[in-house]
Amino acid sequence: MKLRIGMIGTGWVAEQHLAGLQNIEEVEVTAVFNPTRSRAEVFAARCGAKVCESPGEVIREVDIVYALAPQDVRVATVLEAARAGRHLFIEKPFALTLREADRQIEAIETAGVKAQLGFVMRCFPNFQLLHDTFHSGELGQLVTVWTRRMWYRTFPKEYYQASFARSGGLTTELNVHDFDWLRTIGGEILSVYGRVANTRPDRDVEENSWSLLNFAHGFGSVGTSWLSAISDTSAGIIGTQGTMFLDNSKVTKKLIDSEKEETIPFEGDLAAGAYTMQEREFIDCILNDRQPSASIYDGRASTAVALAVLESARTNAVVQVG
Image (cartoon, rainbow, N blue to C red; front, top):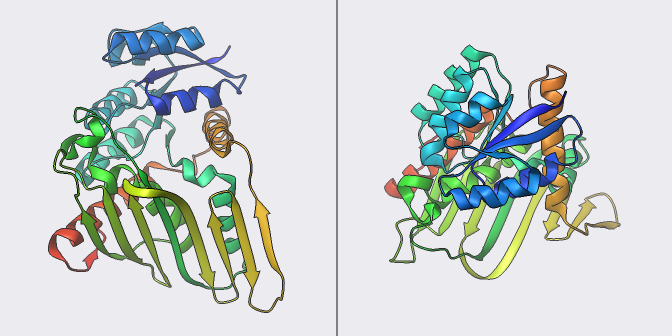
C-alpha cells in the first residue's frame, strides 16, 4: 500500500515537489488544499487527488503532510499535523521568529514524527560538487565561501512575498537557502554583519540583502537581489590548497600546486533532479526510520542567521547569532 501524501499549498513549489514525488513508486498525492479552490482543482487534476476544504481535512486523510503554504500560515499547519502524528515536509523558511521555530520543534519532537526542511540547494549537483570536494580535503582548510544570486523579480503587491509580515522579507524567505548551504561548508555561523536595501516604494520588503558571516574558522558571504537587471547565480570556495567557482552551468576547480584548471559542465534541468533527490531522501527516511539530513534544527539555525542579518542591518553593527 502506498503512503498517502497531502499538500497544503499548491503554488509553484508544490509543482516541483509533485514532479519529484511522481518518480517514487511508494507514494501518491491523494489530498490537496489551497484557499483559492480553483487553484487546488487545477493541481489536483494533475495527480488525481481529492480537493479538501481545509488543512485539517488534508491532515486527517494522509500519512505525510507537505506544508507548503506561506510562512505566516504554515506554522499552524505544522503544529496540527505533528499533533496528529503525521510525518512532515516543511518548506523553508522554517519560521519567521525563533519562538515559532521552537514551538514547531517541541511539537515534532513530542510526536516523534519525521520532519524534513526544504533546503533543496543541497541537492543541486553543482552545489553538491563544491560541498563534496571541500569535505574531501582537496581544497585544504576553509578561507572563505560565498553565494551570489541575483535577478529581476517582480510580483503583485498582494502576493505574500511583497509583505514583510507574511514572508519575512528576502533575507528570511530566500537567503535561508544560502545560509543553510554555507553552514554545510563552514559549520555554525557565529556572527554576522548585514546590509539590506528596500528600493521599491510599493512594497515593504527588502529586495537587496548582503551579509558577511563568521565561522569558527574562515568566513563567508551571501549576496542576493531581486532588482538586478543582469541575472547571476554563482558561488565559490577558497581553501588553503585550492579554489572552486560555480558559475551558472559550470564549475571550475584549480589546486594551488597544479597547473591544470578543470571545468565541469552541468547541463539540463538541474532543479528537476534536485527535487527528485530531495523527495527520495525524505521518503526513504520514513520507510527506513532514518533522520533527514536537512533537519528542523537546521531550519532553526538558518532562521537565526536571517534574523541576525536583519538586526545587523538595522543597527549597523556586528550581531552574534542567537
